[in-house]
Amino acid sequence: MGQREYVKLLHRELDIKLIYHNYQLESERERERGAIEMAFTMRAVKVPPNSVSLEEARTRTFEFFKSACRSIPTVMEIYNLYDVVTPSQLRSNIAAQFRKNAHITNTKVIDMLLFKGMEELGDVVEHAKQRHHIIGQYVVGHHGLSQDSGTKDEGASDFLKNFYKTNYF
Image (cartoon, rainbow, N blue to C red):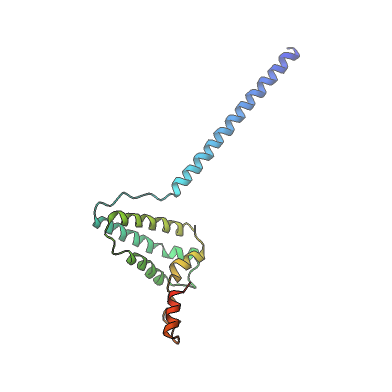
């Protein structure tokens, strides 16, 4: 074998190794891309089918409320809320959110609200929010801390009570 044939053989081997290496990189990228897509679809909230009747929407609403109440101990543990609110107070605040929309009778609107609620519950349980988000949205709300509701305005005038009620951050 001459030097020229030997060089051609080396080039051919290098080309084969390079092609094989590129193939491995492509297949690895495809596997990573597939894993990322699969993880994204696993996290996504499944959209329930539309409710046929108001009774079906009502049943779905009660089922969602039950699942939200079942997740309260987990949420209390994840966000360490025991020093701020009790589980029963948090359950009452969640029930108030449901009662706020009790007047709605359009099934499409109810389904949309259920979807938004499921997404919110998923974010809370997956720890996609921070503690101050949970406290601000579900504990403090618009009326101050639920444990402070009776004692904070005892000696204040009517003007200050109205001011505090409308400007409580």
